[in-house]
Length: 110
Length: 297
Image 1 (cartoon, each protein chain N blue to C red):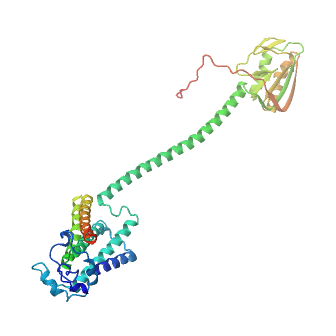
Image 2: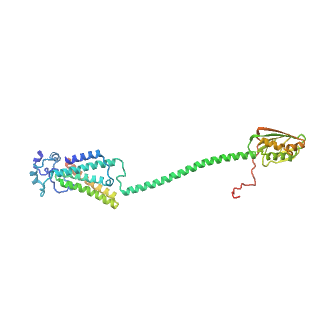
Image 3: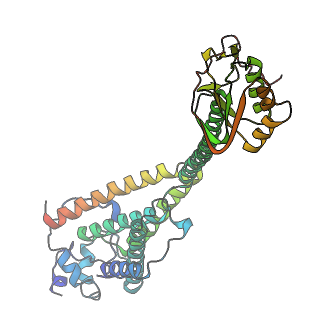
């Protein structure tokens, strides 16, 4: 319940306030969002597996976001930011697909 | 709440309530779980039912996981994190949706795009300058050529009048030289022409023969020829010029009127506002003379 509520409230707040993303944050925000989505999917799957742990979820969520942003940041410093961003998105996307498949198996048994 | 009573171990660990295993959520095995109803208890038992499930769940859990749940803190953290995620998600979608295509580009890409734009701007500016110059040139050319054409036309007309290739009209004299005795000589007629020219005659004709720069008067008294064309008395001379000056020049002592009178002839002079000189000459093409285009002189 709480995660769903949090998501809904956050989306509503974002739409209502519609803030401008600071320039320095613009390259990292999409990556961070994808990383957080990955963590959320993972958490959902873990819950369906019955092994959900709030601590694990919180830590993985934060570290996912931080690591993703850090990788992109490092890539920017090294001059391969665009490529690393793509790499991060690809990896996270694959994981999201994997988690979604597991969730699907739970829900539909298929 | 009935869910909590179930003895199955796997179902017990609910989201916030139970500390899951340390198995990272992300890497949790994806094996198909045996129970379909997992979501249902999750929704129901999500928040408060901390205590009851614990005892039965404890033994069922995998070994070494006796950790306590931390309801409020974990729930708050999860709530905050998901709220942040939703917020960031919405903001990002909004930002992407506003069409700021460049906002997500990296610095080097932006620099490259900026360079491209700069180069394009330079090229376009050059093009503008070129076109402006061309436009200016064309405008100048247009006016210049128009002026040149007009001047050329004026010169052609002036030269045509002088050469006798175009008809002319204007104020001047109608002069009739009567020579009943046939004694007017070539020199008398030539004098008349010269005097008229000296008095400012611009163009003239004698008995229908246009007088030009190469006009010659030949023949004998009584059978004069102008440019090889026989003319008979009375000789009618039409002159365009200042009528007053021309008449004065004719009448000066020892002038044309005087001398023709001495030859037994007479001269009638009539001033007119519109004298028409309509006899034409063929334009002589110079056979030997070439235009000297050297300005050096």
